[in-house]
Image (cartoon, rainbow, N blue to C red; front, side):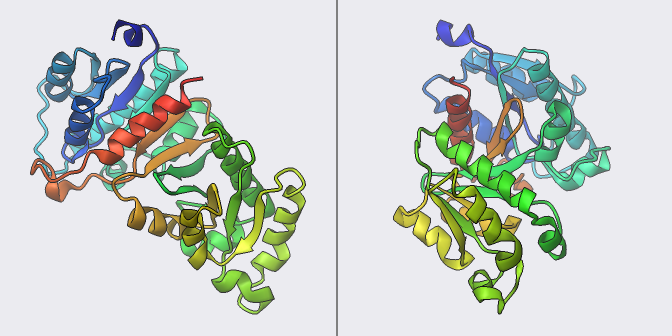
Length: 310
């Protein structure tokens, strides 16, 4: 345990303290073989201090000393605490105090009420750290990188340029390499039904996406052409692909959340520091009712450790 304390800690942010974040973090750390010895808890003192004392790990309090979350009842005060935790974690990496971040689930709606300007945590960390982010997901069976994410569906076609797809493919390749896969096999979802059917059901694959993939295949021979999005994830589970690139948010996330709701991890790719998070939201409706599953947070911590091990 002392050896773990000698390395830079992973910052664990509480998420929205009125949601399930604090309880799934506590459950995951209590079941963790290292019991959070290589972590620092960042959150309200009423949560962070007793849990840190129990686990004998570090903590950093944010928000008013007398703040007490009301479980299941989101508020501006709780959102301010969740934002403060993110800010401390991000700055701590820049300052060399933390080696990465595992972030608890936040409410985008409530964060917007207290001055949060970004669409989500991915964009927040990109602004804080610099770099061009990509959103990835890692589960027991699936690894997925999104080419586009927090934009309206009506804007996806214009956003899915050759450069956009190339970035996603390169991030997928790097993600596979980070898991020790020497010759990654990357499946790429088409944008349109049946991957455009040769231009009959859409021209993006024919005009932009497949020419880009053909060019990149010289560097990455395991790269597929555009494939029908309705079968790519079946093929990944069968073992055909190590990583899948999805064209837009719900194309990738529908598969991830259906098949790996409690096991998938959100990984922000392309930034100077590692950031992971559980692949679920605040679930205010079940907060404090002992119904929340801590598996996704435990997986997020495990992936963060793996990605920061080198």
